[in-house]
Length: 225
Ligand code: CA
Image (tube, rainbow, N blue to C red; front, side, top):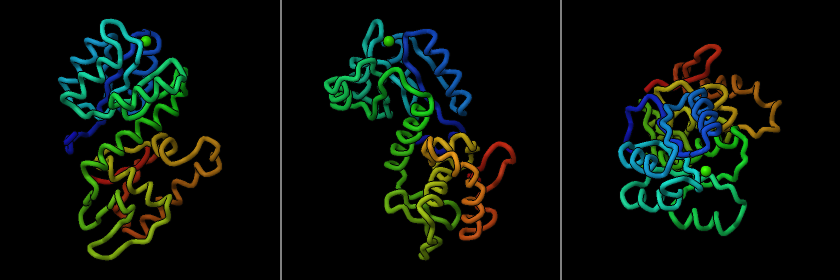
């Protein structure tokens, strides 16, 4: 990946159903992604090879080249995280996808919230692999041991506080919306916890420092890059 300066996560959607493609593009743009679209396998592969996307959403059944062919050819040169969209809930299909080098799959029809969550996880995993320790001033966020240190001193955080710090650290310099935080940290049934984001942020500030997390009122939070 190596796009450390990127202000926005950039994703490619390869999907031949025009209505679904439109919905996905609009939805992911709403989520704050920069979104490119391709409606067939040839265009999809061209774009996937030409750009370092943070993630690619790749439909299996596509004209010109199917999703498996696109993925196989892409993997010859790039390890971009790929989320396959499969119409069939068949084990053989999923195994084939993972064998071919897909990082995750989603069975149609799916909830947009699940797509968001899986994309975040993919991008986080990919970022974590290339940057296991994220340095923010004298604060080190270790995404492998799941700890936060100031110099040699461990700062004791709850699991939820750590997850929130990691999410913000992986997106440092970018606004992390409350929607992103909910999608990433909370289960859908955890409605009651939603309002506690402010409390977690407040507790993190007490432990790490007041300026560590910046509030954008009504929008979300960020750690300055
Ligand atoms: Ca299709």
